[in-house]
Image 1 (cartoon, one colour):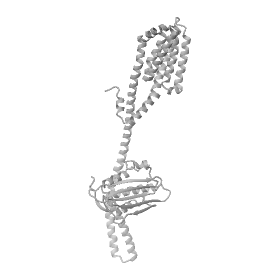
Image 2: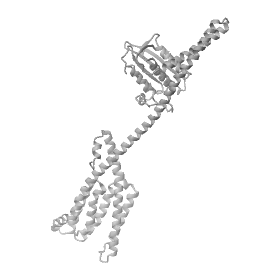
Image 3: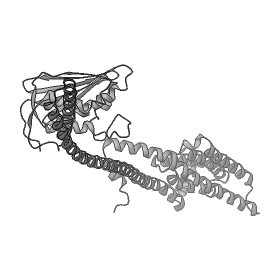
Image 4: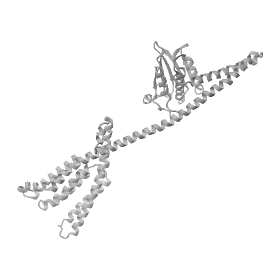
Length: 456
């Protein structure tokens, strides 16, 4: 397994996710990693300075530079406070440059006063060797090394005679300790920057996959709940179908009794009452028959030629309670027939009528639903239009997605239009939705005039 494989996986991602990673990396690198590394370094530098001052104070033979290092320590303390409590913390790696210039000023001051002695600048080069670890940037590390070498040359010109400058510089730069510090700094910057980039890439991928897993688990949980609800509704449907058959038996007996009573009756007033009873019984029988037909599995094995007007009337009877208070206009040419799965197409009309009722119920004015049919040489077009609040364009694109709903009603599963779309595909037809937000919504069903091969 490769140690640094994060970026290899990032390069395999789509471009938009690679851009997301770059934003994530920049944020983590600049506002979290660099300030943290700077905090650690400043703490180590301050502790080291205190130990150095303690050594000077306890050594009676130490040169008289204690006051100068107190000034250096005070400046370093000020930088630590500024980095902790001001905007300097978010301006990384500015603090590294400030610490470098503070250290360089005092180091080269001692370098010049001692005649180009190596001892005063050893600590500075140790600091430079750690710059790559603090900044994690080859650019900033190289820039600080370049500035330091420039200061070294200028300070050497001041500290020694001009004819000794070259010899002095060669002696310093070829010192194994100084040379090691200059080499370690850029190498550590390059390696650690690559390591951090790959490490953050793995973190980004892990977080991204955790989010995807969370969304998937949430979807599965929601789907499980809805499937359980569907199973319960299916069980109720089976029980209701059995009850409908049980209702038909006593209803038929009651109808026969009324019919017999009418045949032997000679009272005109009683005849009218029996006629009313027979009419209402027939109405009940029609509704029960429609419900039994509607409960048949869809799609059926064979297309049937059905009267479009009768299918729409059946659907309106099913929705009669919900349609109260809504003006319903039906304009379907008489005798319009089409090959279809009758119960499935009735389900489409029921779903669309209920959606229309839900839309117009939000209006302050009277609700209105219009159902019209247009016939062409190749297809039947059925238009269902309501004067509800309309649908936003972004929502229209997703209306037929399973479980998507613009309603916040708890029992709305968001499956109605998805089921309608599926039924239309079984008919080799299609469903389109247009809307003017705040004014109207229209659903157009297009069905072939001739029987299409069964979709399976």
